[in-house]
Structures are given as structure tokens and as C-alpha cells.
Image 1 (cartoon, rainbow, N blue to C red):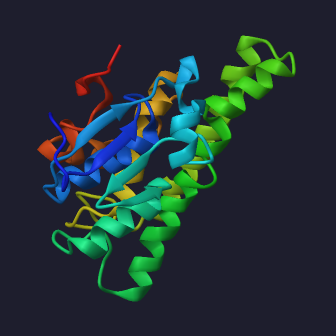
Image 2 (tube, rainbow, N blue to C red; image 1 turned 180 degrees about the horizontal axis):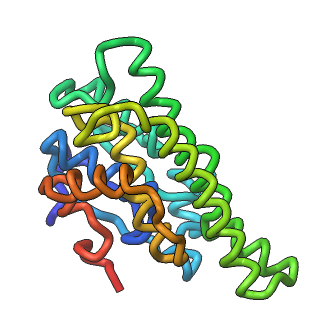
Length: 215
């Protein structure tokens, strides 16, 4: 798609679960965007031009109307504030805090500890590939087990009831990553949420394998 001055540009990579979250949010909000791809395994996210946009050298970043937004949860909440419907956070402040906590279990405590940058440092520390992949599996298992417990007493079809929330936007990409690393998916409740979400075009169209830069 050709960019126009008022169209956001999403800097990402097809397999980045953080970028995956933002793609889902953009789809749910019915925002058309242009992609700018940065191949993480080739180190393109560390190119000087991109570092001027995001000094962390991470994806995603969202350019829109002269602003550059980074960090997937911040981008999703920005979209929710700018385009209130459908809401990604519940009106009830307690449930809203629970949704944010669930999302942060994944986005702050699980995904960052098993992402490419950390795994490369483990390899640099001379851990063999089996140990590196074991690290990722254990990290993801711990995080998803906690998420499962957090919604064990809540009805579906989504994490927090009948409305998709920020929790679902974090869960579905993390389950994608779990399969990549061979995690045993022993959480029927989480898998039921996944099936419900992937039945929605906003989630299905955001899947990594459906992105133009997919390999």
C-alpha cells in the first residue's frame, strides 16, 4: 500500500510478537496503515535511520501525523484513546487493572526475556542451542501458566468475557511464539481464547504468516 500523509506507518517484522499486537489493534480500530519492514535476524533494526526513530532499536514503532510512538502497549493504549470503539480496556477500573496486569505478564515479564536479543546474548555466553531453546520454553511456560491462573475463574469466549481486550492482543502472539519454541500447550482455557480470537478477521489478518515480509 502506498503511504499518504495521514496514513500511519508501522515499523515491524512479521514474526515480532510485539508488532503482531499492534497489527491486531490497528485492525480492530479499522485503521489502514503502511508497513516498513526491518529484518530482525539481519540486524536491520539497528540501522542508523531506524535508530533515529526508535533509539532502542526494537520494533514496533508507529509513525503517525508527525509523531513516533514506540512500545507496543503504549501504542495500543494510544490507539484506544484516539479511537475509542471498540474499546481495548474495560470501563470497570478493577477489571481494567486486571487486563493490564495480564498484558504486562506477557509484554513485560515473559516476551522480553525470551526475545531474539536475549537469546543472542545467551548464545554469546556459549550456551548451546538446546540450552537457549530450553530457556525460551521455560520462560514462556512460566508466563502462560500465570496467565492461565489469572483468568481461571472468568467466563469466555475471550480472556475477560465477551469483549476483546488488550489481554487477548498479548496472548495470541505469545501462543504463536510458544509453538515456535515447542512449548507444551497444556492450558485448555488459553487455547479456547485463541480459537475465539482467530475466528475474528482482525486477528487472522494480523497473523505472521499473512504478512508481506513473511518467510
